[in-house]
Length: 369
Ligand SMILES: NC(=O)c1ccc[n+]([C@@H]2O[C@H](COP(=O)([O-])OP(=O)(O)OC[C@H]3O[C@@H](n4cnc5c(N)ncnc54)[C@H](O)[C@@H]3O)[C@@H](O)[C@H]2O)c1
Ligand SMILES: CC(C)CCC[C@@H](C)[C@H]1CC[C@H]2[C@@H]3[C@H](O)C=C4C[C@@H](O)CC[C@]4(C)[C@H]3CC[C@]12C
Image (cartoon, rainbow, N blue to C red; front, side, top):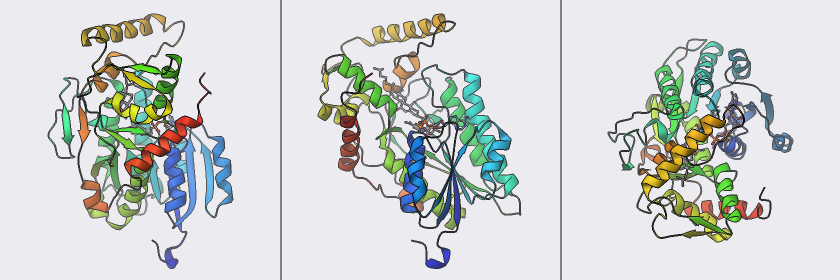
């Protein structure tokens, strides 16, 4: 807790503050950062829920803007003490071109860094991703690894490539002199697959199960572990690391941290069933119903259809060769680096995280499109 002399003096900027994770970061900052005076929420698309935040003691400033536009970013950053950069184009389904993904995720991040340098903002937290590490194109398993586990990070897909490049830019910027002469202090957080209230893919899978008469069909062997982390804990980690970056710049600056909590190690589908089971869905099959080669064939067919149909419409199903490889390759983390470096403990237990997500899914019951 801040003492009264420090009370309400800080200005924070959250880019992508209206996204799935960004909204949780914004709400968490308002609840858990007592030194906040102004919170700037920067996003391409502003959410109507921002209105309800205007009544509290912190000034919430909504800024509609584009991270690819350097002048818009600089204007938003000017005068901020801390930037939490969560904005990004999260696309593994082929909705956007690789050029657009690069522009938003890499050039956008470069713009944020340059804005900090030009305006004298000293602290920058970047939302990276597990995908900066893997799964790699060779499908090597990463079994309960940590930030120091050796792994061949090799990417072909534009999204992980862009996240890896952007993370590198952020880490290399640590120590650069910002306007006024002080050093820039940066770090990167790497969430695994985030779940929780507002998770679009969980919503899509729930609706798909409803359309299939309350059933989902197992596609991935139960033995393939996929890392998951609750959005509230990821948001809390952002708030905490941003605070501690200001206190322990030498230790935290230039570091990467996986995001973790006590969510169980399971396959992607079995984990989803922890949430969707109590919401009335059933996962059919103890083993995958289709052989892997057939799934890969369907994934390739989807990719071909996407390419053929592109001039007419956007065909972007969940299954494609990349998402199949993601779901079918073990990638889990086991680390306590964030606890050792900045005292992170998950704010939400697994039971809490699960119940909150279940409550959210149940609340959309009957609203399937
Ligand atoms: N969802 C996950 O499982 C996951 C896992 C690891 C890392 N991440 C990272 O977390 C961050 C947030 O992801 P999310 O799942 O909340 O995605 P999201 O799509 O819900 O949120 C991203 C936000 O960024 C905004 N945005 C996109 N392009 C922009 C631009 N040009 N200018 C300004 N704002 C822009 C979007 O409008 C959106 O509100 C991303 O950087 C993503 O790479 C997500
Ligand atoms: C093969 C099908 C039956 C199932 C398809 C599931 C697929 C859509 C899921 C599986 C794994 C998911 C990714 C994973 O949780 C981690 C991330 C990292 C993050 O930076 C962005 C989101 C992403 C890529 C998830 C997207 C959806 C995936 C591929």
